[in-house]
Length: 66
Image (cartoon, rainbow, N blue to C red; front, side, top):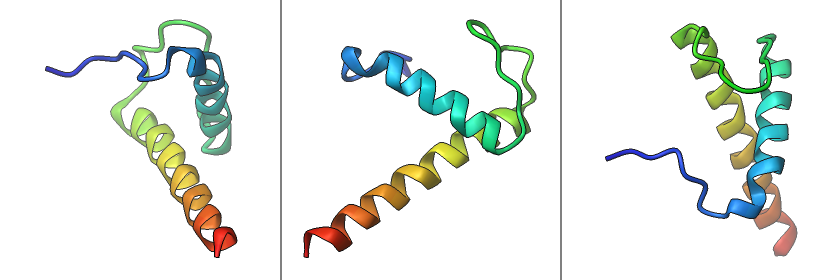
């Protein structure tokens, strides 16, 4: 069963900011709180942008640790 529970609750605020930044980068306007009116395409583009940024950071971290 899927849950929307943060693995690190202390990071909740930073994750919200990250989500807002990703939404802005792909041209989707989010409001604070419930955003259930988003289309699947909009929600997917936000999630995809977040994953893209996380992978990019991880790759840079690996490159810089060598």
